[in-house]
Length: 330
Image (cartoon, rainbow, N blue to C red; front, top):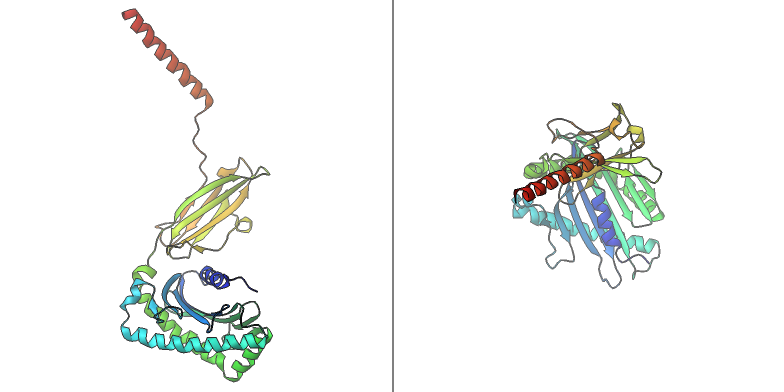
């Protein structure tokens, strides 16, 4: 039996998978999820649309008014006709997804009164000048089958007996050609349309807030971590150098991640010998910066102990002098 929170987990994983495309480009992604839980008569269907890291529209069959709704303020510029037409398409799509989900359950002879999830992910990636760069499609029966449209957009890779069956069927129906036409055509047109509607949000440049942290490791050496926070768009370069020489091979550099507020965050770390921290510099490149930044760890400013002692002595002398003067005057 699967975890009851599996559908929530899938949505979180979806949100984390939003920065896989080329730097300095834009992308449109659609996530369709059909799932069954114990006690459900009909499967639930959720549709989520993203431009870059921004959700722009959504649909949930569980809602009392199961219609496609805007999830970004700039999408409210679309006329009612758009929402009516797109809702009709989503309702039809939900029936198709439901049939595929039930087919997979039957193919594996799984119990209906269990947790079952079907996830469909597809989208297109365009350069800043609007040129098509990439497209993708993936159908997943959670934990069992994966059907992926290959990079050439003309052939399929299948894992699992259910996916193999779908692959053979879709090859006979020229389904790859249909997806290729959509991804290179309508998908790009939609993306450019949404970029125009939301240009004040999607085409802005927010410079990163940066700093370097210092952590002493148990072995005695030091981890220097260069942080970039609150930047947009996601394209950013963080590089560590030692005496001006790149340390690309020695860096720990995780993926850029959404910060949850429409911006992104990233860090790059290096392990350095204690006492040599000032030989290392972090270099940050982002389109929101007027020029690249160069940072280094700044040791905390400490007052030497001898200066403290001198201060105490002088303070004592001053107080003593004042007391003597007052006594003398009296």
